[in-house]
Length: 168
Image 1 (cartoon, helix red, strand yellow):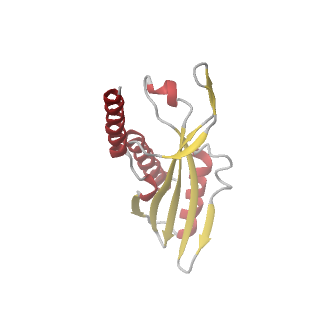
Image 2: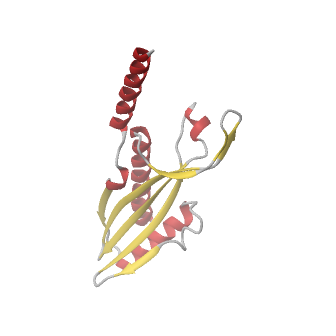
Image 3: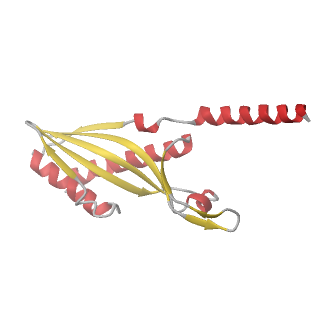
């Protein structure tokens, strides 16, 4: 009996250690992009606010953008919420999840720098017959697959933002 218990504990520890290797400290990682435009600072600020107001579902996205003015630069803090991009069977569990993050957009003269940070997964409340009611939560992204999807989304958003500014 003791041998079975020891074996079970070893198997549990090995599995737990394997999961720890997949953990990613996503709050420390940033996606940074920079682009120069031939537009003035006020135009850039207005276009960036317009872009987020038109394109993202975050409640009152346009109103939630914080604008901070410094001597020669303007900083916009933008909270973003995007539907989790699941595919196939994964959508059974993650179909109504969303990825939350913040964007810090620094506009200095005609240069726009974008920093992305504070990545989270928003997991809404759910109910199933096996586990009953499960309380929703917002958690740090820890799995590599989720992190890759978050990076893909942020890259797409930044590219779309830059295209929006260029073509409007």
